Length: 215
Image (tube, one colour):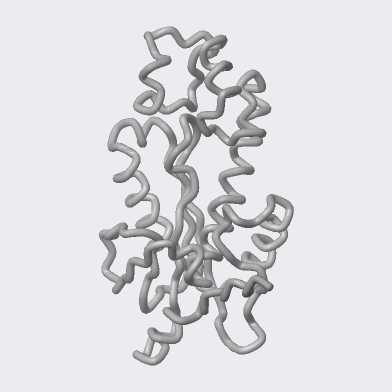
């Protein structure tokens, strides 16, 4: 019989901070760094972490089915001590590059919280320009409950935006692929050109100054 894979303790990082005197811990994560179109979205959230307050199923948003993500996001928004979601669009991404845009978006998400956290957990290795202690956690969306909650909020919010864009630009199929570089998306760009929400720095091989869908 195969041994069941042991699940990580998703409160290990939070407990360590509690032992050092922290009360409010904010998790921060992003959605949409890699797509060819649409914004990058970042969420910051402070969740209650006491006994009986945890939501079962919180994890890296990419591991959760869409319907379950939306259900969890609703509970996270309802139960959070504070949360904030920010988006930076394709034009700003093109102007300052995706890494700087993500860093800025995370900063805005944290600074927009209605409750100031004692420490901020960020997924990956982003150093944010904030006046609050922070800890970077690689694969944090799967290892930290707080970051996992933020990843769900960011993903659900961005997916909703891309469904709205799908109604404006139905020829690209944004509702299906959310702006990522799928075969169907690339074929649509070749047929229709770029639209207003495409990232020019991500689509150079398609862009010859012809933007057929701008009308």
